Image 1: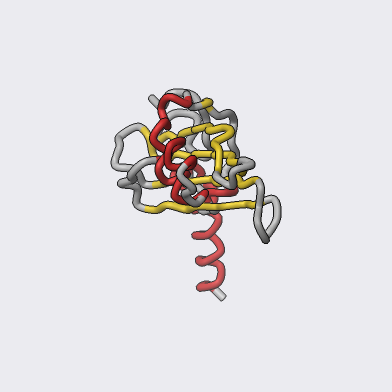
Image 2: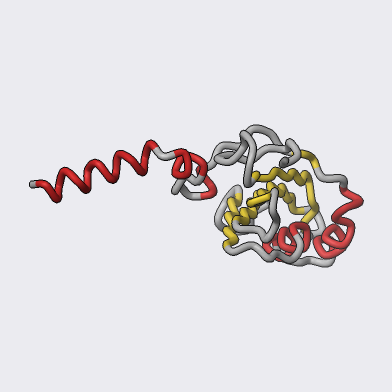
Length: 145
């Protein structure tokens, strides 16, 4: 019985701990997004050319987001329908970046099929997750301290 009490007490202490609150153990996709910064199309011109050449939505999204040195990367693709989609939304989530102020990043990319059956980039937004400050458990367009 004492062992059960100690385990319950330890669990309660971990949940109340500021370190635990600063590093929630929930999936990256479930972290709240306060706001996102639109990305200038000039910043992903190479990805636009790739899209026009008939590349897949995933290849286009990874070209936009660029190479990553993150410890983890999650990619979520949602199409408007399963067979021959005409729209696709891709979210690229990265965590554990080797940066002292930015812990992670989130890219939201909207793609649409053109009449020529190639993909066109509709909208690209980006947000960050900070290592310190007030935005430890969410993504925001604000600069990380």
